[in-house]
Amino acid sequence: MEKSEKNMTELDTFIPKDESGIKNGKYEVTKGDSEAALGGQFDPFKARVLEHPVSEVGTLIHLLKSCLGTGILAMPLAFRCSGLLVGIIATIIESIICGHCAYILVVCAHDLCRRSGRTILTFADVAEEACRRGPPWSKKYSKCARRMVDIGIFVTYFGTCSAYAVIVAANFDKVTGYYWGSLDVRMYLLILLVPLIILCYVPNLKYLTPVSMISNGFMGVGILITIYYLVVGLPSIKSEQLVGDITQFPTFFSITIFALEAIGVVMPLENNMRRPQRFIGLTGVLNQGLAAVTILYILVGFLGYLKFGDATFANVTLNLPEEDIAAQIVQILIGLAIFGTFGLQFFICLEILWNGIKDHFTKYPTIANYVLRTVMVIVAVCISIAVPTIGPFISLIGALCFSFLGIVIPILIEIVTFWEKGFGKYNWKIYKNAFVVIVGLLALIFGTKSAVEDIIDLYTTKPDSMFFKNLFDLFNASTNALVHNTSVPINVTSGI
Image (cartoon, rainbow, N blue to C red; front, side, top):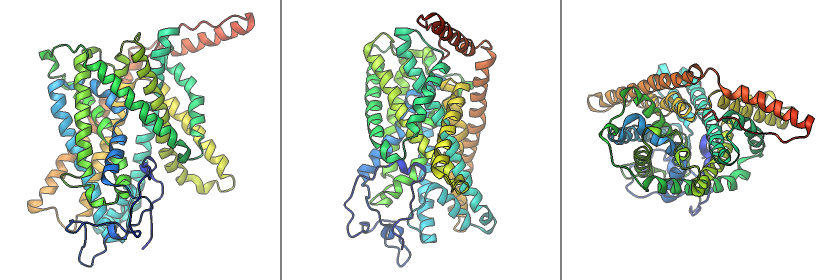
């Protein structure tokens, strides 16, 4: 059997290979495990060989690191849309749905590994193998299923890169604006273009590992200081804060799914585990990680909305008192952390797109690769400039991308995978899957509609956006400074 079928795909690049201890190149399989010793059938866990397998504790840490990102900073806005009481209940329900979809993806992968004789499957592999080994009508869709997953991952994380650029610009502007006057956030995005291109010129992810470690440290410190600000001087709960406006619930759902969804890291994490059968189960790594993340998200969302009320921003760090040094440190740390994370997210998108076109550039592959990097960064920043508001942007990504990729696709994979085996007594899985798909589609439709309306409002309610005026004024000021040898005054308004 092959030693490893896994290439650096999807979010494998986020999972450091930092543990060893495998004996004789074989997995240690616990006697009595439901996934082990299958009576003569192919056992992918015994056949799988990894150079650096990861323990359950290590996998849990990686899962927490992958889930705890910028989404947590938007949870107070989500609770502003839902209300404190509804927010707690709905976040738990949404977490259960996301966790269940990740669970069935892994279950399908385990079943398909045995049937295909493969030891490792990526998300796209699972979709392809499900159709290839499913009912006769699904076989012709195998390649289409793989492309659909790859495209979904690309669009999701490329959109996330654009959202990250806005968050970096907004946090930096909050600090520099206090001392030297605010810029329109679009101006900051233009300034960030060159540093982002340089960051994405790093040859491969090996050299971004130190950046990732530093970014994780910055994010952790920033979140801890933010929580300190949230718990100091909390006001009492008002009755009108318990239940939000029902028309804002799609925005809540979209932001929360953006924060909770980790479907992209599920298969890479499972593929690197020493005992992959322990990833799922009632007390498995997946449930442990999502439970911890859900509690923390509820805590930050609840405290953030309770503290700042209707004044809550899409990024709660922007609510911190701008004159406090500690708050400024938070904004700088969060900005730097997201800047570093941009590079990691970018490489996921780069790999997917480059693998699709590299055969057309065999003569000068290096030049073509770096031209592609440049174009991709420019496009990502242009999208940020077009939609320079964090809340609607995150809501759009959550509704349009994560609802489809993290909810609808895993359910479809389960249906195809177990088509021949059946769906349980009274076909209960069919009803369960129908309910989850309906939830996912409703979130996709209404969440996307709400986000698009918010983005349209950005231009219809403020048709006289100051960005181009500021850009023109800055150009004139720079020209006058060069002609008359004077300093350039910077006093333009912020657009966020």
